[in-house]
Image (tube, rainbow, N blue to C red):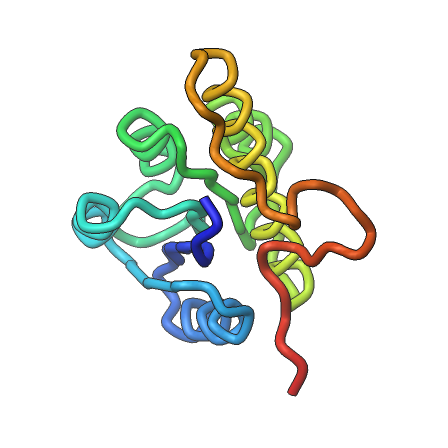
Length: 160
């Protein structure tokens, strides 16, 4: 599982999608964008994503419903909720439904990279532990997951 992180950005605002995509593409991630459930489902069918950045409030779909469907169909994908309308209720509901993280807008570049990297780290450990518990050969953990100070995280911001 040492492939570049595959990240799907789901937001109805084009400027937000482009901003996150630029941030993550400069971190050598494979990034795709969607803004409708049909696009999300098609993207996930075509290419399983490691991390999904998901807005909660969109005109034609409910982010909580999308989260529920994503976790039911693609449980190995880590979902990070990013919302401009945070409430304690939606935060609790998101975590209960399986969201890895819950961030409030505005979100800076470093926050996007840190959240995506933490989600990738969590996913790698989960897959590693799952493989070990089933007696299979565990996927090799990248240096990003080993925790040594000299190792680099899976997602890094490129220097200009």
